[in-house]
Image 1: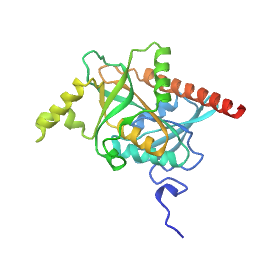
Image 2: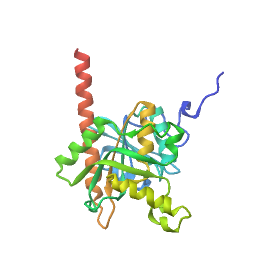
Image 3: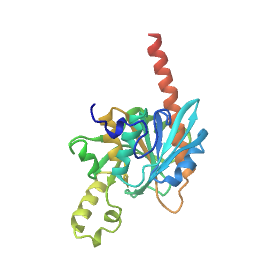
Image 4: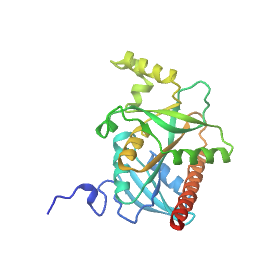
Amino acid sequence: MSEQTLLDQPVQHHIRCGVGDVGRYVLLPGDPGRVPVMAGFLDDARLVSKNREYTVYTGSLLGQPVSVCSTGIGCPSTAIAVEELAAIGADTFIRVGTSGRMQPFMEPGDLIITWGAVRDEYTSQQYLPLSFPAVANVDVTLALRAAARARGLRHHVGVSHSKDSFFGQHEPGRMPVSRELQDRWNAWVQAGVLCSEMEASTLFVVASFLRKRAGGIMIAAGTHNPLGDLIGTAVDAVRLLIQDDRARQAAESSS
C-alpha cells in the first residue's frame, strides 16, 4: 500500500475538517475571534471545528454553502489552511483582514482590494520562485470591486505588501538590518504599493499552484475600523460570484 499524505486523510490534520464540512467559497480572516462575527453574515452558520489558530464555521448564501476559516497570523499558517481547505472541496478564497496604510492619500477605514502582492516573505518561495507573480483571480477581484462600489464605500484597488516580520516593519530602526528594511520599504512606497499585511502573497501563489481562485480585501488600520463594511463587502462579493458561477454553469449546460 502506498503511503498516504496528510492531505489524503478523511479529516484534515490542522483544520480538523473533512469533505462536506466546508463550502467551495471560503472567507479567510486571520483572527479566530473574527470568525463567528463573519459567520453572522451568513445564513444558518454553525461551528464546524476549532483547532490551534484555525476556527471554521459553515453557513450559506443564496442556498450555497459558504465557510469562514481563520488562518492565524502570517503566511505559513495561511498556506496550511488553503492546502487543507482545497483538499476537501474549497476552490474560491477571499482574504478578509486589516492592513497598514502605505500611501499618504489613504485614510483609516479605507478598503483595499488587492489584485497582486509583493512577495516579501519566504513561505511562497517553497512553492514557486520569486519570478512568479502573486496575483489574484480577476473574477474575485472584480466581484470585490463591484461590491464596494455598490455600497458606496471609499476603496482602492492595487498592490499590497506581504511580510513575515511584524516588528521588522513597525520598528525597523532597532533591527541589525535596519538600512535594508527601510530601503526596501521606501521602494514599495515609491512604487505605489497601497498597504502592508502578512498573508495575501502566499494565498495568491498557493491558489495559483492549486488552480483555485483567490482574492483579497483589507481595511486600512486606524482609530476607527468599521469591520461591518469590510465583512459586508466580502460577503456581497461572494453572492456575486455565486450568481456568476451559476449563470456560467447554466450557459455551459445549455450549449
